Each structure stands twice: as structure tokens, then as C-alpha cells.
Length: 538
Image (cartoon, rainbow, N blue to C red; front, side, top):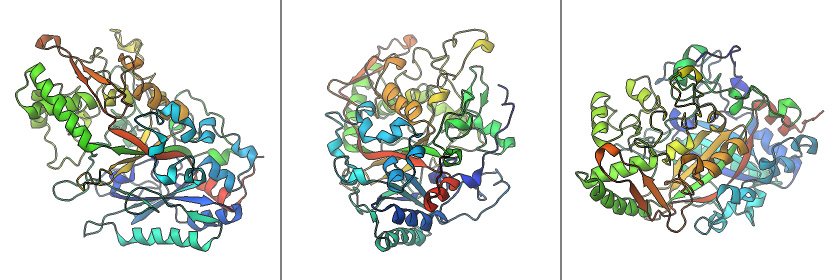
């Protein structure tokens, strides 16, 4: 697959950090997210101006783990990162002109709560009434204007560096000193003023890429043009970008994730004026998702017992791991079913490509890391290896939807063409501790994309909460979909095995929404315009 004719040179210094690369993978395992309300436009702009000079950009700092050079500019690695994002109501409260705001997309104007029916966030099992107080649309949530995101390194004692507490205190002080600014209360967890986030720990107490259901996470985020230096871009795109269906990969268009750049249609969509207000910005869907770990584990144990009998599997553990793998599309250690369809295949793969002992590394230069992402589904059209309705196959269909996928002539295939415009960047961290007895744990996802409707909402509605494209009827995603009564997940069996298809019934609502909204993440240029009150749509 040939590269683009005109290479993209992303303007790192104008882009807020956390967009190009997830902080959690860069050694910032702690997060504190606060919500600010503005009652006076001038005071709100003072608040933005006070923090604007502290905002972390996408300019790279040297890395001890990756060989990629930082670029033309080199900055010191911060102890704490700070970033700002705004709801539509927030831009209005800050005095951004109507002529600018009317160029923003409809779904962003509506906000997440108003789109609940589309997202599946207002059902009997997943109601809006379950949202944290600070997010509830009929109360405090109407006043959410600014999202303040802090991410911190870990100190020698295993706790956040002291600079994180100092940064929180600075934000709180500004809210106390500026009359028209308020740090909202009502987050679930130990601190009602801040959503606390923390990566899970391994057996040695070190942060690791696990989530509360036990899966290795953060493996296959998209790679797009300009995200890495040109000489590294091609290799980094393997498994992470777009594929032509013949085994070749390229980075996705930058405009799928950054405003003002050409997208996969080679278009630059219309945007809020002036262009400098939109360019190098993006949107995020903030999703606080609660995970009922106890109920999930109880169901998995029950269903795995039935699977063991149906497929005559050797041990309960093999049955449990097989069930988890079929639901997710990956084994709990991250190995995809396309690479290792059975438990025996998994053992052989791990013997040949030995994982690091704690399972930390999910993205390096090794053959194992490449195998975790360099695969497709063209040769598995019936889902014998990876069920069509498995979580990762729904979220990132790769070449599943290629209408010419069965063509023997590789040059005529379309590969991931129908999937390329639905890709999303996943940022965020887990929250809570599944072992503390509170049943208050989950993940805060910052779904980052240029079009909330075309990318995030489409995947959430059509692929996770509906099964047509996965040949699954109305069956939803077995992990994060909405599960009403009699919800099921069908696992095909290999015809050669003689085993019957396994119907895993009785799925429960293991993941529920606890709050969120849509935010605009402006460029540094736009932040200056907002803070100084000089947004001029003409």
C-alpha cells in the first residue's frame, strides 16, 4: 500500500497533549479530572488565561523506552500534565460568539445526555438516574462547562508525585479567588470535587495495562499521519492503521482525529470559524463506565462450566479463559484469537513469543507485539476463530466488512476501507479498586475523534448495541453492550471439532454509564483566543 503523495507534518506545539499519545502508556498512571462551571464570561476567561500557560502540548519529550526521537523541539518531561476541554455550554458561557459556535457539529451542541437514546444510555438496565450527581442532566450536569484533566507520574513510594496535589490545589484556589468560577462537586469516589483515576497494579505493585475484568487493554489504538516521524511512521502503522486487504498497512488520515486536516475522504470538513479556532483541535466523548466485576465473574464462572461440558474442555480454567477470549476477541493476556484460536494454540504462541513476566509490554518492536496487532479477519468470515460479535471485532472491524474480501485478486480488495472512517482514539484510566468491597470501579474513557457522530456514536450505536453488521441480529456486544432480558452471545464451533455452537445466555448489564459529556479540545491557538476573548468569526 503506497504512502500518501503529500506527507503530513503535524504541528505538535499547537496541539494539546494526550491526543497523539495516551498518558497512561507514557508513565502517568494517575489522573484527577475536575469539572468547572462559569457564571461570568470575563471571570471564566481569567480562569482559562491563568491555566493556559501551564497546558501540556503534544511536543514530545525524550523517552527511555522508545527509540523514536522527540522531534525538532525537546521539552522536559513534566511531573504532571494539564489539559483543558469545553462543552458547548462552556463555550457559550465564555462568550465565544454565536457565529463561531453555530459552525460546531449538532451532536456536540446537544451534549451527551440529550443523545442518550442514540447511545443506549437511558434503558431500564442503564438509566440516566444512575449517573453521578455532578453529571446528572436534570441537575448539576447542566452547568458543566470546562473539563480540567491532570495526569501524574508515580513517585518512589508508589503514590502520585506531590506535584499532583499541588496542581489540584492551584485549580481549586483559582475557583475560590475568581467569583464567577466554581469547581463542581458530586463525583463518585473518595473526593467529590475530583474524579480519581489510577492504573491497576501487577503482583509487584507496578502500574500495568489491565482493566477490571482482567483483560490486557490499550493495544490497538489507531496510528495516523504525522503522529510519528516519517521514518518510523510506516512500521508504527502496521496493525494500527488502515489495511488494503493484502497485508499492507498505512497510517490513517490525520483528519480523522484532528480538525483542519484532510480525512480519509481527502476532504477537510466545514468547521467553526475562524479556521484557527477549529484547526488542530478535536472532540472527546467523556464516558465514565462502571464495571460490576462481581456479577461479571459470577456469570463467567457459570457459563464456563456449561462451555466445558459442551466442548469437553480439559479443565474449568481452560473453559473460563476460552469463554473470556471468545467474548473479547483476545485472550486475557492480549493475544488475538486470529493468532491463537484455541488454548493449545495460545500456549504454543506464548512459548515461541514469550511475554514479559508481568504482561506490561503491549507495544514495542518485538515479534510478539507485532502479532498482537498485525492480523485481519478475511480468512475467518464465519467467526470460527474470532466470533463476529466479539468485542474487538465490533469496535475495529479491520477487513471484516470488505465487500471484495473473498476476491482471489488481492489488488481488487478494499481491506479496511469501510472501517477507516469509524476509528476512534481511546484515552483515560481505570478508577476504583475491585477488591475494596465498595463495588465502585470502572474506567473513564476519553473517546477522541474528529466527528463524534460519524465515529464514536456510530460505533456505540451500530456496532456495540446492534448486531446487524456482525451477523448477530439484535445481539449486542457481550462485554459492554446493553443487555436486557434473555440476552445471549453465540460462539461458533469449528466444524472439524464436532462440537456444537455454544449459546451463552443470561448476559447481565455488567457495564453501566455513570456520567459524561461531549467536549471540544481546542488547539493552543484557540485556547489563547478563548482566554483573551478575541474569537472573531470574520
